[in-house]
Image 1 (tube, rainbow, N blue to C red):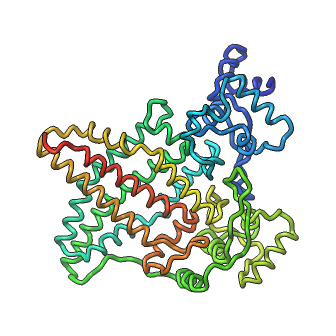
Image 2: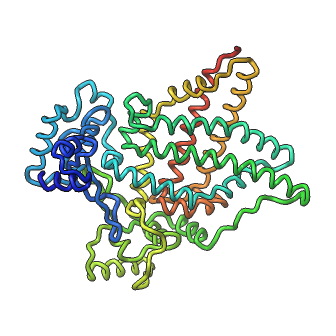
Image 3: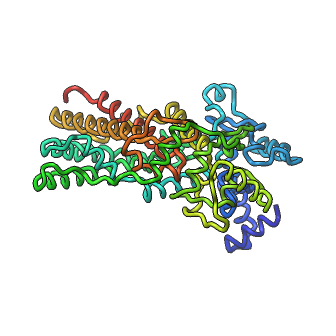
Length: 460
């Protein structure tokens, strides 16, 4: 401990033993250990700090992680003395490992979320926010919504008015989520934040912000299309045509899933393997990800040796896949790079289950109404109309995004939408997690709006 305390003194710029002890013994700053990131590949290795405070959060309700899972979580399960050190820390802090009996009745099941450290969960959500900003096709999704109206001037005007009415509702929900995203024990989001290690809260903020931006874009596209119709009555929104990659997707869909191999999962505290298909390998080698052989080998858990590289190249060639030697990867490395498609879908599913159990829909709905202060019959009617508009637009967008699903892992849609190519880059870079989570959050927001509308008084 002495070297760590000396390093802390240098960082604080003090020689005071008392000051150093105050920070050193603070669970929020006292680092228990460093752990290598699970979502790291060759060329992008990361190490995360685990504080005493995080261990306290993980072992208390609602997660109630038992001692038997703390070792695997910290990647130290087979290190001599690790169990004793953890047990000593828990006893020193008077933390019951695994929580109390009453806590255990509500604790979430072990899932991919259980394997995330808090720093890595924050890194994952930040990477997703960046990919949403750079690769989610906001304009083209808005144009697709316009196209579904079979646009006439009246329909476009009504859609723009509905989006304008819904926007303040979306913005107020975003503000409320942001306000409640603190780690204050009194926040209704605290339990949800704890079971998702703040990933869920960060995703809620990112997706509510995306929904608000989409409504602004939808209003702009409605006005632009109305202006085009005035000049050219038969015109339609400009949406790019599918490229050659989509033709290849259709061909692979017709062939069905072909197994390439099985790979150990990264977000697991128990041994679990995931299926890797030839189609997934093909998707990861082409744009936008354009992996090189070294990164692909790291994802497939192959050792970094010349023999392993040659063996992988030979395996690929058996399936008609060629990778040029010395090829450079196309996209920057993110936490998603390390995920296989099947594991990414399971992570989205696990987040959805946590949302269903712990996302505070009723609290949000009640607080939205409380802050709106609709005190007249006209105000209540206007509020009800705006909430209904927000709910309808969330449902419409959710349905549209669900229709754009692409083949991922062994999930094979019966057919591919002619507009599915709009989501290809975003889906490929998040390996299916992104589109799935978008649909999940839009459904969650719709439930909040519906619950808020149901709680409105019938009259003032």
